[in-house]
Image (cartoon, rainbow, N blue to C red; front, side, top):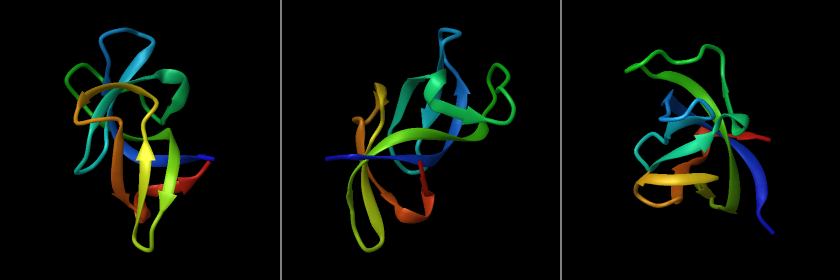
Length: 90
């Protein structure tokens, strides 16, 4: 059973007010509901801010984890292997 986690990402505005464009460092990008993304400051048009997104952690390795983003893929798929240092507890 997948567990919930939070992943450090870069966040930009989405097309709709209800979404953000979430970019995993060195990995995929997706449009994700704002309800699942945490940012301290809402990004301005054309800008990015650091943030966290809720993800499903499918598998944990020694140095990495297989995660799945909860959104619509833009670059790559919704699943990616990420460095465990980017993963926070839910």
